[in-house]
Each structure stands twice: as C-alpha cells, then as structure tokens.
Length: 327
Ligand code: NCD
Image 1 (cartoon, rainbow, N blue to C red):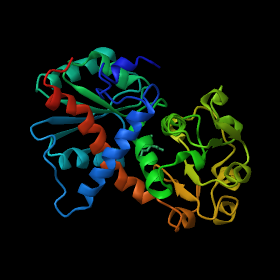
Image 2: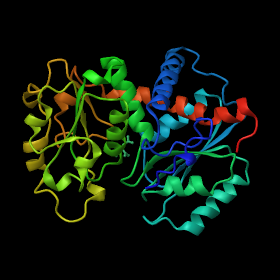
Image 3: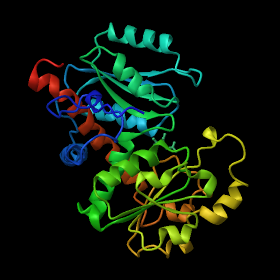
C-alpha cells in the first residue's frame, strides 16, 4: 500500500485524508487523541452538539455491511452539526474503477465535503482519495484487510482512558484472526507509533500473516503464554467471510485453544483490560462472561468511537475553515 504521506497530510502537517495509520507521526496521533478527549466531553453533555462543521455535507459511503462504524460516524457528523447522507451500495468484491468513479462524480456534483468510505477491497480509500476533487476529504472506515484507522484510534483512546497516557509501560496482546484483520494491522501501527512497551500477536499459525515479525510484534501460538502479564488484551473476530479454504479445524476447537475464558484470563495481569472491536462471536473468540465482565471495556469502545470520529472529521475539515484555500 502507498507510503505517500502527502496524500494524508498537507505540507503544513495538517490532516487532509485519514486513510491508514502507517506513515503518520506520533504527534498527529496524539493530537487526535487530545481532540477526542475534548469531544468526549461534548458527547457526555445533555446538549451534544457543537457547530464546527455547520454547512458541511458528509457522505457515508458504505459498500460493505456495518452497524457500529456507520452509526458512530453518522452520530459524530451530526454532533459536529454537519449534514449527513448515508449511502449503502451493494457491489461485487472488486473495485470497478469506472463505476465507482461515476458514483463519486455524481456525489461531487452535489457539492459534498467529505466521503467516509467502507469497501471490501484493500486500497479503495486511497484510490478514492487520489481521484476526488481537491476540496474533498476522504476518511477510511475499513478497506478489505488493509486498514481501519479510526477503529485503531478509538482503541488507543480507550487504552489511554483506562491505563493512562504512558503506553511505554504497557504490554498489549492482540488475539485472534490477525491474517484477515484490517483492525489488527492498524492497531499494531498505532501501538508502535505510541511507543507501547511490548506488542504481541497471538493466533494459530494459519491466522498469522506472512512476515508478521517485520511489523514490530512478538508472535505467540499459545493463548496463555501470549496473554501472560498482559495489561491489555485486544480480541478479534474470526473473519469467516474472508476465509478461503480450511484455515481452522472447527469453531469449537478454536474456542478450546484461543477462546478467552475467565480461567485463561488469570494468566494476564489482575487489572487487565479486555477489548473487542465488535461484532463479537460469543462462544467463539470469547466467553460471554468475559465479554460482559468487569474487565471488559467493549461498550466504552463504541462510545469512544463517536468522540474519536468527531476529532478526525473536524481535523480533516479544519484546513478549509482556518486556512481558506485547500491545496
Ligand atoms: C471491524 C471491521 O469491520 O473491520 N468491526 C468494526 O469496525 N466495528 C472488525 C470486524 O468486523 O470483525
């Protein structure tokens, strides 16, 4: 995927599109987290609106099913006082360059200001960002197996709120279907940029991507070893829809070996925080008792998604308001 950072950040370092964590600076990530902190205040008030994006039109363009991501983007846009258009497009799994561009051109002709895009094809958000009119910002809401940067940022925000700002003292274990997970990829880049003490990935050999060691992680194939003394455990869903061939014996066997139970959780630190981006396959990745238990912050992750998406959207649009011309 591209490392062309000029696509995401302008020459003054301001956010222009938000496509992937890779290539961004730790300062920018920290700015997003700080802005999210102030927006979390807004979303907790009785009047939950600020006028920052009044008069702007944001299009949620979802080519793939989503509940939480789409609705939290919509709520975030509304809480920034933007007008929101939700478009769900059913397409085949291939980016059909021309027809996709046709859709975009039609929306551009309606003078929209931002596309929030989810697509089954890796690289689609970059493709759109390269081809839209210069005044439009593109936010990646998940592209294939590649990236899901706002999910990673809401996860970082949740860790910061639960464990404090010093990621250097944290041992974080990401458990599950790393191979097919855009969330894992974005989480790993974000954790490393924020200088996390140790980042581990824990999965059967068949669900670890090739060359995973180059990502700056320690690899484990045993759950209890992988979560030993962990401060944070980030569970991932088995991406059955992306599995080709038999990568796993059965869901029952997966649960036996990699399912997080109260019993297995005792290997981690007593104050461990358990996360999951959702949707959860209960009884496959984790036991309901853990998902709904006192260490779980899974629903807080959802709430934080609104504040973090408000931060990203307002930062990407800020260049228009403050600087006048956008390049
Ligand atoms: C994730 C996604 O869509 O990549 N979910 C989400 O955004 N809340 C993870 C998943 O689908 O398992």
